Structures are given as C-alpha cells and as structure tokens.
Length: 225
Image (cartoon, rainbow, N blue to C red; front, top):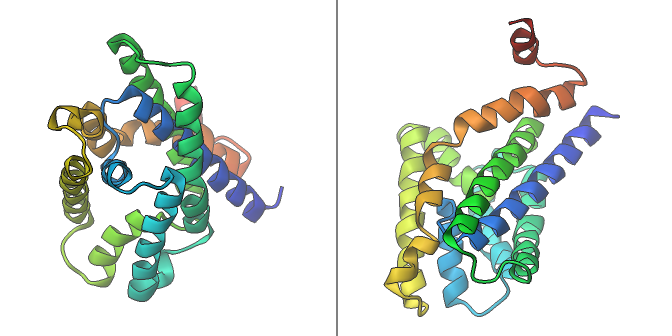
C-alpha cells in the first residue's frame, strides 16, 4: 500500500476510533476530555445536533489556525472536523438504546473501555502525522508561533479554560450543578494527564509497525528481552 494512502487510512481509522470512545465516555458520564467538556456545555446550551455543533466550533478554530499559522493544518484536521462529531453523536445515540440508566459498575467499565479505545485511536491518528486537530493547533500556535510559554503549560491553560467554560455553559444551558461531574470528572483528569503511557504503548506496538510494515525498534527490543 502506498505510504501516503496508508497514513490517510491511519488518520481516518484513528478519528473513528476516538469518536466512538467519546460516545462511550458520554455513556459513562464520569467526565470527558477537556475540549469535549466544553463541547458538552455548548451542547446543553445550543439546541442543534452535536455533530453539527462540533463542526461549527471547530470551523471557528480552523479559521483562527489558518490565519495565525496554517502549517499545523492538514488532511487529518479536516477528517477530524467532519467525522468526529457525527460519529460521536451516532455512537452515543446507539448505545443509549441498550444501556439505559446504567449502574455505577457499568459506568466505570465504560470509562475504562473508552480510555483504552481513545488511546488506541490516538496512537494511529498521531503517528499518521497529517496535521493536528484545530484544538491542538491553538496551543501549538501560541507556543511555537507566538513564542508565549512552553507547550505543556499552555496546553494546561487551554484545558483548564475549556473545563471551566464547559461547566459554566452547562449550568447556563439549564444543567444542574450536581450533574457537572458527568462531563467534568475522573475521566477528565485521566484524559488530561495520564493517557501518555498507554498511547506510547499502542504507538510502539501497533501504529508504527503498521506504518512501517514491520516491527518498531521498541517492539523488537521488548521481544528480545
């Protein structure tokens, strides 16, 4: 398979898997990643389909990225923009038919499954290296183009802004304060700070070998040991 085609397939696969995971996160109702917590707040406030809302919000961020520094925008950016929101919406609506008012153990199980799936999808999406999401581009532009602070700190700031704004908008849209942990909870903390090692594992064991058509150096070393 042509390497470029393979990378596009990896990007598409990664976005689809990540979108499915977000739908499962929403079923778990124990918190979603920082950007999705903002989207959850907006979804509560604005009466349109989640998929369409996702496209609108990311289109606004895309305009910012294109004006500020278009180098971070690629095929993956547009695949993410047009697919992720709708697949998340469809996944959530589909699962709601079978998982109705789940008990806590079911929610925890869904959270764990969602974490594994999103790390797996992220590994393929990131390894394809065909551009970043519009939200990721914001922190990269602030750091590398505007030269304001280090990336890890800027990313923490943008994540915190999303979380605070998401919670506030959720309440403004009619949500109850006691329900905020369903969009900003343990899942939010895990996705913000603790996904790295699992993404690295899937990257080394699956994404890089798939792209190269062979085992990665890390995989070979693990096998030798």
